[in-house]
Image (tube, rainbow, N blue to C red; front, side, top):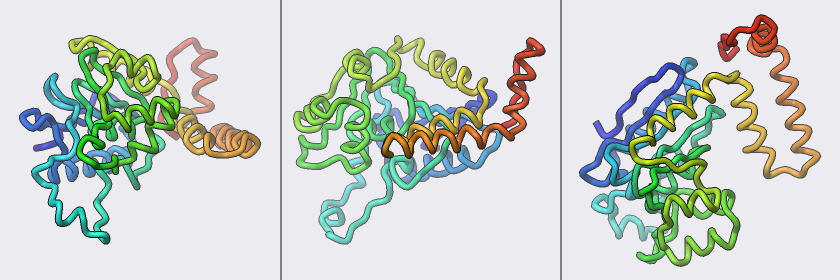
Length: 256
């Protein structure tokens, strides 16, 4: 199968499994990602997801060029499906982490940008390289990149089409952490499990507050924050948290 699924408690690991093709996204892989992330969004027992790939060479080199028909792409009525599924028209308040185990070029970086947090191996290279081939990123790359790094840096990456190192990506805030290749998945799992140990409804509310609030005027954003905060007060988890603190024990959250 092009996509593998593993569960680590409340953490779901989704692995692109095409190392022989640098984990490029073909139709089968896209279908596998759609199935995996649709199931994750609906599964009450899966609270955090990690997206990664097989091997240590590539997270994803982007779209599989063998499947790209120039005649079809030049059709003005052509409307391609969302690249890798999660880059457009997919929404979940559950957090998704990208564990970048190698090169993330073009659509591969767009997949990582569609995730909430990113951890990269120190040998990874990241870039939106489409301009080399007179193409524009079509999987959210132009829009998500500029929301994550300063505009001038985003423009430089887009217009030069030159990949950057994991160290540089960390420096500009594009990735949250950089580790050795050997430490990458343990670090990603540790971060995901740390998040999963918190109140899942509060984690999702935090993601929603930032995702929706950053595009609102400050007063509207503060109103959104208040609504989300008040909605948590009546939940079982909001009662369990303070009770566990008072009883000096780890809380047992249920996402209810």
